[in-house]
Figure (tube, rainbow, N blue to C red):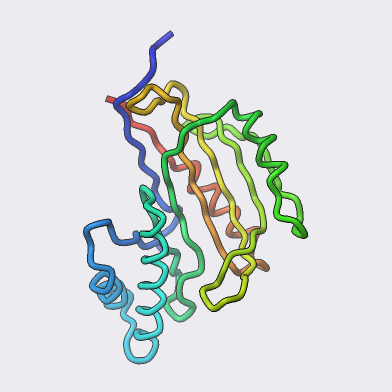
Length: 197
């Protein structure tokens, strides 16, 4: 049996070409939004609208201080349709214990979350699909849907030897397309890779 793995990294590839990486911590958000619009060949009023949306989403992602973030823009006309974020968090139990916690953490008035323990190439994971309400920035609440994969790679620890999980979350607002987005989230989780050493 091998010991804990302290020196490691992870990588995730979005499942199709419609994903655009969010700007890094040192990048200028406005310049990134402008370059993204140019890369998507958006001009005129559509460029102004998309750039505004890109800046807004990028600022929200940066405030959360995540490892990585990506935006799904399969057609610039429709703007950002989903986000994909990943982060490292401390693992606080077995997959089964974590699944039980997720099952009891439903928003009141919303359908209970769909929770399962699944096997991924990177290790066992808790998969949670649920509806949530979030503030939309205009003083009202908005209904969103998410699929979270909390991946628990075997033997992975942080600098303090605490078991570490990788959380991968895909979020969208087009609830009628939920099954397609959920499938895309599953594909992204399956592309998560751990490298040690």
